[in-house]
Length: 339
Image (cartoon, rainbow, N blue to C red; front, side, top):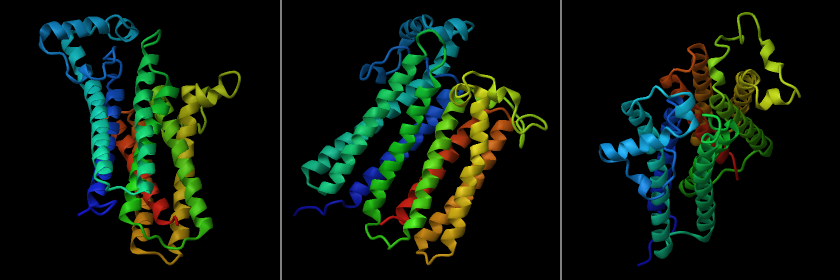
């Protein structure tokens, strides 16, 4: 007897992928905040899954690390034990990435063979497969930028890597939601478009959050609500020529955009919540709006605290997790108000 297509097992599989991507983003945040991302200088897709075993292999890995700018310019004081500490986080990050690939590909093949997927879901899953592969490529491409002259990865590549992870999660969640809630209510197109614009604003904010992380701009201007005491915009925000470089390369300018645009995101979500509550809503739509309302203020508070306390590890990770949950709520809200 043939199994029902797009059944609960398929949904559990997709949600498992979402959980793994979430874990990977958390570990990626720890990797970045502990400056561990350049500790593995060579990329071995298969054999790299096993960390160095024995003192000789560890010494060989450490000697390879010593050949690159991060050790030579920043970590020349590192002992082998120090190196093991940063190696762990980057290794764990890469292993989770490989695990996500396996968890996606093998069940996907099984569901295909056993004909448990509809044609529509197969097409969506192929898009997820491409996104996942592209995400892995961007990780390699990002690390490569920090192995040449400067001991830092390109903040543009970091933003591409992180944003693609968020979007891959959102797309996976969307496909799962399609299977969990196939019946949708007739919606107000103007309200849906408002959610879409707000969604794009949140993605923009996430990109600039990655810029802040890549340039360590969170270590500057550690005051709130002003950048420095009494100054809404610090003079270092616009010191580069031509002016547009302040928007994409100047740490002060990038922090200014990120902290200021946070108000825009809050306003968008408040409008969504206020307008939505005047409509006739389903129980899930109400929950979606309430989740957005709560999470945007939690995320805003985490951002303020992260700045004030100069990005301690736990707050930096919490702020990134907050962005992840906020994007999840926004994705769920858009799905519940889409036809």
